[in-house]
Image 1 (cartoon, rainbow, N blue to C red):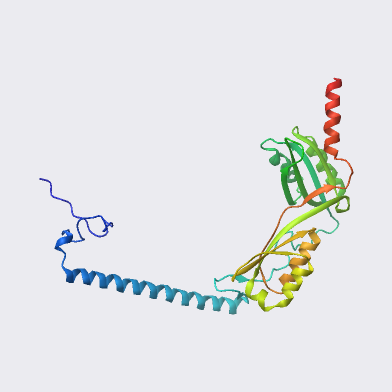
Image 2 (cartoon, helix red, strand yellow):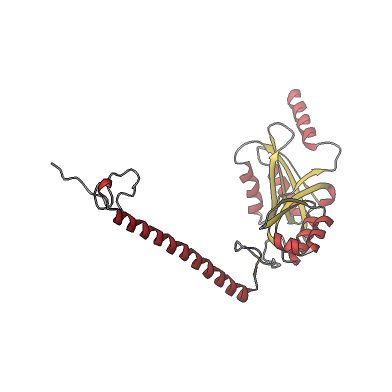
Length: 280
């Protein structure tokens, strides 16, 4: 007869259903003294584990204190989140104002709803070494047509060239470029602020009310604020809060825009194209 295989603690691992203990004996034959010893060992291990976690927490706090002393960053709340003032020139186009001689143009593009169109459009910018500042893609009011709102810093000649090259794409219906005075624009931003600093500094609440921002969430750790408006207002709001050192995170959406014209150029274009097709 094949000898019955015995499992050790590392091999079995399921003591609730296994009929044997780690020594291969039936549970009915377990010595109460041995069972008490096993329970004491488990209790001691639990105490050691808790002690290790506490020591690790104290070590983390000491390390954080050294980092604060070396870098000047400071802890805002208990979960080791650090708020550091933003450094101008190190956050991409948000704070980098190195666009001398260039104008911010907004390109509004309409295309068929096919896969791969976005890649074709962005390739036009890549070939001409024009950096895209923001990009927003959504379905338009015309069924089957998508709208792309792209912003970039360039000269007038380059913006017109980009529009002409994009319109050459087969699935692109229409493309136009505008400056800020020719369109209505809107952006949305979210800021995560340190709640202890918000409660300690009344100026933060005044700035939030002054810029007509909206508080969407408050907890003991952080406060989330939403600000919707034009780009200049959003950046001014961010700069004032950042100067107070309370900003933990900041993000803003791509620009959405509509023209100031009384008619929709896309509808006019589609109507004209349909009439031309009927005449042929």
